[in-house]
Image (tube, each protein chain N blue to C red):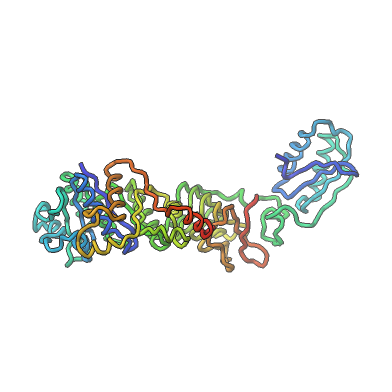
Length: 223
Length: 264
């Protein structure tokens, strides 16, 4: 499988190192290492242009990467270009300030949150609460059932009941379900206004707060 | 030692009493000794459906209040060997009985009968906890509509909390025609939501209404689709392995019509 965070491409004007949206500088480093080790010939002495597909790297971090590339692989960085057009759905496409990987800080708010695994189906009349962090349900949430989490909610089955994520105020909280047909959704203080699909669509979906502070639901491709 | 099975549903009107009467009778027809117990104190019906209402002298309330012996309160069904009914009191209400008292009755009945079927009232309150107090297993009856299924889901959660298992599902009033044209949930949809074992599907059958009014459980007159379905469920309860009957409409024309009208 091709590396999703970093790609090394040869164009007419030379080598390009394409860096896509990512979570942290360490992830980028690891991805570069992996990408270069895929090459079956040495790149020593070559020059490379860095194409940033999202402005997530700070200047200091770019400098750090440049010196790292020089030291480890003997690659000279001849320039840095930042593409500001949004790429890679769904996260990077969202024109909102609340979205997780677009924030400029590299701290992942999920790192400090505990999560709890619920290895059964939440049936009608049952409630599963975890205000401290995220909930992962190894089953369904049936109509009349309820899940509440301080952070994210992940349902590895069908979500037919009500889901309230982000109860601790983190607006980047999301609700993911393999089959998505909830009665009610709430993230933080935002309720869903638009009608959510009544029937599962046959693919995983994700709900999060999008532009205009409304909850949007879309196909879940990757985080 | 016999098995105590509670027949329950959450929602009313889905066929708990009809199912209890028919399964009890069917098990007796299969040469098992059976006691059916009406747990719907204050709103008893099982005696009518079984056609035994004129013969009720004592009820479970009298047994609890030690007015009579349990064996004396049991009404024997004369049409088949080994079938007894313990009626509920119509004068009292559900709070007059404690779950422990019901459990004591069940434990006594299981020493003398192969099967003890408890007809649970609708709801999730005291009546339900009384009915399920002495049960080892449960049969959840539902119709294939969303409100009955949500209530069944609730009841299954409560039964699981009470560590009653297995919990088997009966889908009642199933209409192949309505499923065929996409306006009723099919078996797979129901099982996908409730996620318990299916023990039988009873088709919609107008013979049920006439049999209820006459006080003759359907299974005495073998032949109607409903009666056959209840007989198959009773056989499964005795441990026989019988595949679940498919009520899908057959024929090329139907298949074509279904293909075009099915819900996608």
